[in-house]
Length: 304
Image (cartoon, rainbow, N blue to C red; front, side, top):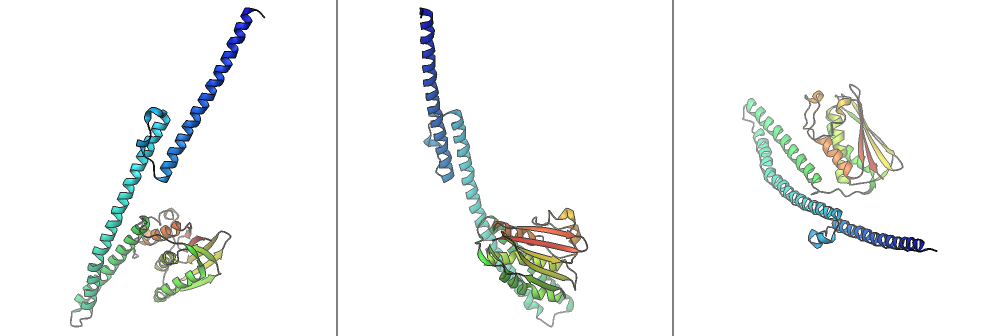
């Protein structure tokens, strides 16, 4: 072997050795970087991340950016938590400050209404004060209830329970309202167990049934049926009321939404919003089908 070949061979060996060392070192650095990134993410997930524990001189540009992003996220989360506490305090204050005055207005107007010597026009005005005060009381209670749900002041606690018992309890609560409009409510229920918070789900079902009563004419019909599925229990509330426009179906669960077709009916547009909030928080959902002039079907799906 001549001298030239020996030199090329030595250079090749040196190149291969150097490349191998470079690859090993680079892989080691990459592994360390990934481990540090994992540690940063684990710290952020557990809520223990602190940018001050990381030395920028030891980190790659990616790690520095990730560290800053996580610090900003932690700062935003802390601000959000503080704001939520302020909202909780505000809701409690509103609830406390409005409860007594409204109750007093209702009480005094009822006492005045019992005074027989008052002229008829005064009695009519007192009656309107009572009605409007009761509406205001309902609205404030509904708003506070919704706000408490949204800010997790009140949390739903789902557990296995009977959907049949749920439907029967709501039926007896709303039966009197139906009789006042001569509306027949028929229940067709199979026994079905689902996972739900009974108190809050009763409220959701009541709101939907009350909605059906409101928009069903006197002498109409409403049916409530329970259908068991493999993963859900389905509750159908079917009425033969005024129906809902197709373009309004996606909007009826928005807070304070009122269709132009229901301006002559009483309501503030919060019952369906609250119903969906309650059902969604429990892992369920609500579907609606409707035909103008023929009626609507609200289907509540509760997980088993």
